[in-house]
Length: 320
Ligand code: NAP
Ligand code: GDD
Image (cartoon, rainbow, N blue to C red):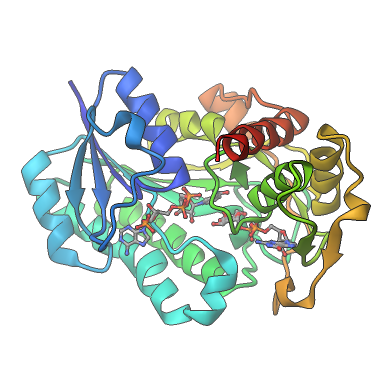
């Protein structure tokens, strides 16, 4: 039975990846940082099938000892301070976790067993003010937030350890991926939750920032499959993962509200508070390398994603 370590196990992607690896017969070790209240909402249904260990990307020793104890063949580094607006309020923390945390994990692997296969959760946020449309593996980076800057560091240190120490260090450049398990502050979940809540008469309006920003949105459940495929290749590499389609935030609102027979224009209020100091206006992937080499294709369409999220929020809110 192969053993995989997942950092960020309590996050959206950690939960889907753990489910996938369990199905494939892995022993799954999930790294969670210590907090005063347990935060296993997304993994409660599988918590008895995985091993949760305490660890923190800010603490080198914790990473070394968990690799020594569990001897994984694969490490998926999904942990990060991942919310873009927070990265302007806490830029140093974002750099420490999201950038330097990658080096700490790579160092731990180099010391304990350099044969461990490593996956780094890189991001389309690195393309920022895009230098090319659509974005592919060779598109130059121009990050627009401290988060994006930290992810660029994480990407390049992964490439550097691959080239310096011949390690199997792979960088997955994933475009936005969402699900009913998405954090409430991200725009898609904020919209799906509000559409459901307004429909049920629990809320009256939805306050949003830039409705014209365009993203290449896919389903997180599809994207974790790509992470696994990347670590099953003969060689480490960089891969862009996305749908190849882009949609505006406004379009997400339109479909989400229409799904519950409402017109978003009656409820969405523009609020300056949600505008960013520097915006990423347009992201759209060219995933042809992943298609050709990984044989990866997303299964869930944009409309299916939006309606899946609204339906899930409706069902959850009805129970409350
Ligand atoms: P998420 O839901 O925000 O999960 C982040 C995870 O990181 C949580 O489990 C969090 O733990 C953990 N974490 C934060 N700081 C940590 C630290 N110092 N030490 C250990 N764990 C820490 O993010 P996600 O959407 O699943 O994304 C997974 C990864 O992919 C992230 O690296 C993100 O930046 C990257 N990414 C995401 C997308 C996307 O669209 N979702 C696209 C491209 C790249 P707590 O629960 O304790 O906070
Ligand atoms: N969060 C949020 N809240 N975003 C809003 C709002 C709002 O009220 N109103 C408009 N937006 C716009 C943002 O300005 C941005 O252009 C877009 O919606 C998407 O914002 P988020 O959902 O917060 O995601 P993100 O694109 O900034 O970052 C996500 O995707 C990255 C991959 O490109 C995160 O998951 C990152 O961790 C990930 O790397």
